[in-house]
Length: 246
Ligand SMILES: Cc1cc2nc3c(=O)[nH]c(=O)nc-3n(C[C@H](O)[C@H](O)[C@H](O)COP(=O)(O)OP(=O)(O)OC[C@H]3O[C@@H](n4cnc5c(N)ncnc54)[C@H](O)[C@@H]3O)c2cc1C
Image (cartoon, rainbow, N blue to C red; front, side, top):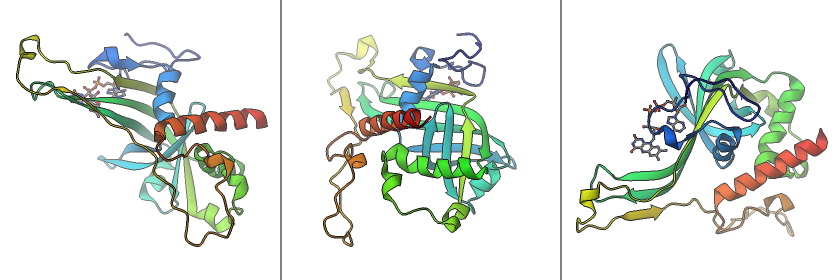
């Protein structure tokens, strides 16, 4: 695929995000990129300070083509990014271990998304207040309405960074073993070992007030369910709420 302008449902493709290796596994449309981002709770944010690359894991959330993350106002990463810095944010999911008949052909099934943009500090008080509710409600629909109000000191101690996705790519491997033809008669087990991240049984806080039940917004977090399915559902509920408010 050559360089392309953005369209309403696809990111621009440039030398920065165009897949060269296994480009058949790549996608640039919003649907594919958002599916990987929204199925993940954790991302890795990469940036350079004084020529030194850093890559920091954190929690991200998405609204339209904006990504957000937050942290302590004292965080070096957040203080640095507040200046408007180029960032590369990655989300990846491991879906399977692919065991081939040669070491070379071992592989992994995965979904990953790489997003490029410029990070900014969200310093408008209304925008920041909305973002701080967003991080709760995006994961646990409606939960911010059940919590005590955020204190001014807590808002001050927290920085929120926002980044409009300028360019992005998704890459997915969802396939079986790809051995060399002459290796299929090797006497060795080969196959795929699927990997899932599954929600465990909730452990109520020992200091819970009597009679407290989990709110309706936590219904998706059922023991045994895949986390990525729950996160995708929560994102859809959050987007629905946002649309209803707008
Ligand atoms: C769990 C896991 C296991 C992997 N195992 C292997 C392996 O064994 N061997 C191997 O070669 N690769 C593997 N990959 C893929 C790896 O992430 C790279 O895509 C690959 O190494 C090519 O890197 P590159 O820098 O040459 O990519 P290029 O194609 O040169 O990258 C150009 C642009 O393409 C996009 N891009 C590249 N890779 C990805 C990606 N993974 N997700 C989203 N966008 C992407 C980015 O925008 C990037 O800037 C694995 C990925 C995962 C998540």
